[in-house]
Length: 175
Image (cartoon, rainbow, N blue to C red; front, side, top):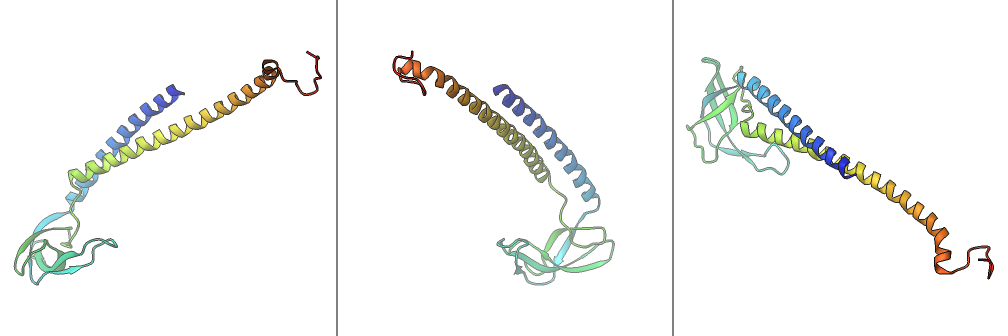
């Protein structure tokens, strides 16, 4: 059983590495594709900062301000965008926009790609180890149950002789 679990752990390590490497490669390709369609521009705030609710329930409020920018070429855009706290009217901020000049999220960073790859690799490793461990535990339980039944059967034949007690259906002096 130890060999099976050791083999499972080795398989889990290899699978975790392969899945993590695939996620890393896919993450880089995806980030490159997104980066080709995203651009950074300088926007100028045209209003005071306010707060709006975060994207997720219970998340912190986000500081926002109306801002204007030009992309592509001289095409003007005005929209309320997230800005750093303390931004004043007339300050400039760097934002990411798509090919139409609409505010967009930045391409994933190296840290985000790495964190995703580690998470996927670790998840694969943990999943395989858990399944392998469950298999070994079930197999040990079956072996233990069979062993206990065999022991009880053998003990039923040995115990009366060993203890000196009468067996069922046996009378005194019937040794």
